Length: 183
Image (cartoon, rainbow, N blue to C red; front, side, top):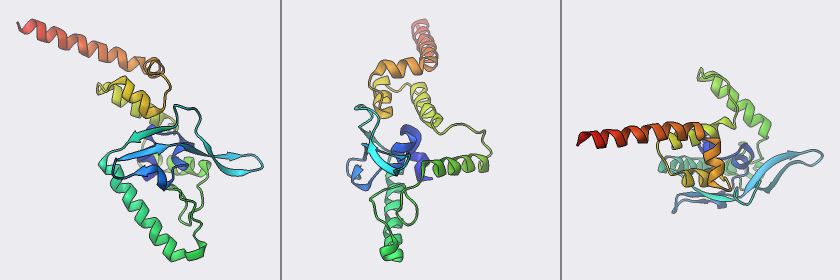
């Protein structure tokens, strides 16, 4: 479940590449700087994120921080239980023995959770769009949304979520009319 709470603003490979040193519990942030990917003939590898703007610090909620603390505690217990069988690579989202989780298996898990919840099937990447759309609909500053998603320019965010911007414009126009007509 942890994966899906964090992934709202993070790409699939980025969520699998998160490492404990990337979490600052005091500041309440996660530094997105690596991505886990499968490379032909090399297997699973950690690499730098897609773009310079993808290398970002994301502020997370207290709820997510609590989940991360629980995850860290679980991993510590697994290390004790498995001893040398635990392959500690510092990954947050890994298998119970510390090994990296294959991105394809993450998708299988994701689709299983959707089915279990009775939700229609949608792509993993659509969680990012859902996150951005909801933030924009809430009236969040587009600059903040762009930074959370790792977009290099606010215009990319505004262009991608223009349907939300149109609705926000309508709401703004209605609020203005209501205020002016009160007089």
